[in-house]
Length: 465
Image (cartoon, rainbow, N blue to C red):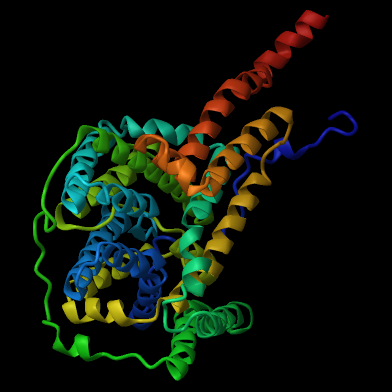
């Protein structure tokens, strides 16, 4: 019998959660539904529609060069999404561009030594190292050792929340836009609000069919609202060639050891964040995710980083937008993400489509991302509800979260006065907050866990008698 006033949550914390998906992970769907859901997953990857454009505009690249960035980003994400769906992880995981690699390329590329050529070259060297660390050997990998930490609800829940915190800067701010954008601020806010309202309506009151196309419906309504006030010209799309031609190191090549270390620090939390989301999706589908299977998923992420660095793109991560789509539609079929991966490669290889993304309104997509990011963030809160909270866990998680969050609010003059390595660590919540959490949990909570085991309890009882 538990003592009066003592929580009994610990007895149920390890029980499997209720299945979330109406359509299971290995179930198939009719082709029309598969196509619609695949297209919805493509348009759910907000960073893919935002990061190439922001990077290209920052370096004053031409529209064809920006279109090339879009194409390579789509193709890299498509290749890894296919591998994760049917060969490696075998979960409905859509791999999208990682905000950390975008931020690192943006920061490193503006250094005077080499620009984007040195940035992508150093990114390539770091990706090769990361690939070696994630090679599965007898179902295990060096990087896969983190998996045992992420099985703890306090670690996985906090990592999910820190991922959303890190990429939240491309949600609401990009929805609002800037004073130079045509629809700032009223048209951007209004069209985005129409998109969000359409998604919410379809999710809550649209029934099963509308729920599965909720994101597409919201994007269509938001785009229509935007074009009513700000017509878009498609002349550049019509003039563009049909197929993209991938190039090896299109921006040049250079390597700096210190920048290789920076990119390696950026890639590690992408793997940690992906593992946390893999675990969440596996639980939703009532799947057992072994360490070997997790290691294979990490290896897929590393392969994507190598391809992206060579051709000119971004490393990938299990995308929170698409995890939000899984939760919203309750369709967990990995054949949907397989179809999405194929569609990503086809679209990325079409220059006309890539040029279309250069001129399409971004606020509508960012508004949908704001909603989906929020859903995933609250899932992190839901995971943390399984934790048996005490002073040690409150200290570890609270300090880690504010370390991760606080780095985003350091003033630019202070950040730029620091070494580059420290700049990137403090501005990546998954690095600063995630590593702080793992270290503090190991120091403060691991002994406590050992002292609460049955054998330890029996030993204490014997000593007392």
